[in-house]
Image (cartoon, rainbow over all chains, first blue to last red):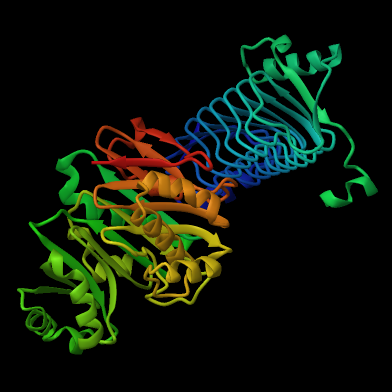
Length: 227
Length: 298
């Protein structure tokens, strides 16, 4: 286990060190101490390493992640795992706004709650939230899956393209062009796999599926007043 | 951006450390806004006296005989305690309005930062650490307080444009965000007789709350009404004589984190501002919900 203490070592050195790890590195286990809400911890990683952040992080932790497995034992600030490409990011606590924004791949697991705009403009990332999510989540989502074991806030899936949204609890309101959809066997299978990979104890049958009504894809003269 | 901090103490044994704790919190927020910084401290009331915090660009000339001059004008005892460009005038509570009028006459260059039984406001252009040092904020005691570090958007980088803003006795407001309908509200509130000194959007927000409370609203009701009447982005933290409130606009894109223990309620624009507080590892830490009013009072 390689240890890096942000109380005595610089964030720039930390990220440079982690980013320099090659695919075949022998230093596969990393631990980051005293994050104290610092910004941009463990960003831009591109190696199959395991990084444990002991504490809570500020803006943009694990942004642009590729291959790496990042585990935050506290809570995460805004934009955690933003634009993730692959790998895993697991947060034991809560996540602030726009968790997993624009993510293209990988798995983001939030054990607590996520606040507003979770999965905004998601493009292939899978997000599993054990608690609740805030308003405007999955706004303009294009691909990937958002799984919410608790409740969703206002305007879920507003202007959604093709992302799949699964919610076990209540949905305060659906956004424009987002509708509830039939849960077919293939969706239950996707959900079962995601819950298993996220190590979440929940039954797929308890969830409802939401998706795009596909009415906003093209300009429609009847909607002129809405633009 | 802008950075906000707030601290409301439940545990009286922390009161001597309020200024030091708030200063540390504010310094961590420096990179959210390096233009100017300010702090409001509620230091506790002393009998029937009121405190006026005044600021001058020529403090040596303005403050030299100000206490005596004002005392002579009011026919009442006035004490002056100078801190750098600011001074706190202590005088009988019943004569606050008279003192404001007298000050405008005696020292037209002065700005009155606040008046009230307990509030003192210190703010200047500069970094939080420097501003806090100039006024020796770390040595101040108190029951609650708020701090702000500014990245200016809606008005010039001046002392008058710095936060907190106080538009009513013992009231103050700090703001992260920008209001878009402040010009209309400034005109309307001035017609209603509310004092607004600057072209700053936040001062209008503060004046709006003062106006609502003058008309009988509680702070909680005034904050709720602000959600309907003020247009724009805002995370507000407000202070009153015995209380401390937080509200975010319905979009809530301006960040906010809160922590509560048996000893305090704390607010920070980011978690970084809270990490030095006692017992933070076991505190309840959460993000205030959008369009929801939070309020604590002694």
